[in-house]
Length: 360
Image 1 (cartoon, rainbow, N blue to C red):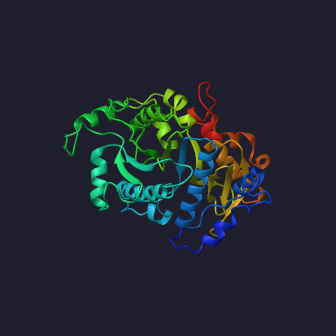
Image 2 (image 1 turned 120 degrees about the horizontal axis):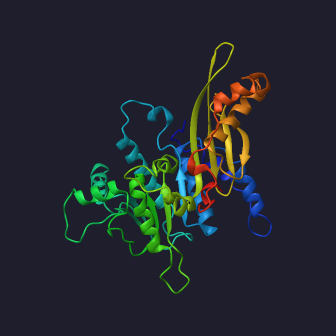
Image 3 (image 1 turned 60 degrees about the vertical axis):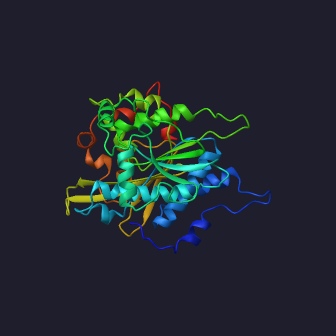
């Protein structure tokens, strides 16, 4: 779990390769450091590392970015009295801190907008968090969907209907003048077409002086979960993954998973967990929780592993440690019954019209 103190500031600085004689770290040195970067030990370290990864991706020309990590400590997320709205508020606060890091930087031209799906959600969040629409210099807290000028209704039923249809916003999505980065928070699968609509309007720079294309950050949206909803009634179709979501680059990605496995000897059930971790430009690390508050790197993947592949990588590590039986001892049939015939979801398969950005 993460702690909230700042004692890791020295350590995070040490993860950055030292400048070379020519004035900067080589791409190979940066890649090697990112490949071996450990998961964060505090939210302070996490914020610094996620900003650094996003900056590296933007400098490489990436404009659709994913940042994904648990917004609250594990012991808090497991509490019965923690609601989805508590998680949403935590994500908004984290996104605002993330946005502040890009104000007046070389990577972004203009302000940074943190965007909730619609005005009613934004107004409620502003009231609950006791914030102004411009909580910090250069940072705006606003919404993707905007009503007509002069429409002061708190609740707009037409937005609910449009969202349930999963077919975009009906023309209420517009870019904000002077904004160079949009950080999207608390959006559902039905609201993701609004993000695509925004992207279509900003993807070609309108300036003639070599201005930068604005960046969109999908911030803690759990895109893996949302992808699973595509194709269901009242949700966007599966082609939305191929056309748009597959182009989103995971630049800072930390997803934990817990598993149980039966064994033939006491204690008969083994609980284990691990995480997929990526800090751009590093590869995807499969990490096994050692039970001592630390993770052990099992393997590095140039392509993001499917969840079934990730689980098998953790299982192979336990086999090497002797915690569970080896495959030849377990038997082919029993092993097949554990894993099944198919270990990937539809969107993890190779799809002809999809980009590989989401896996690289």
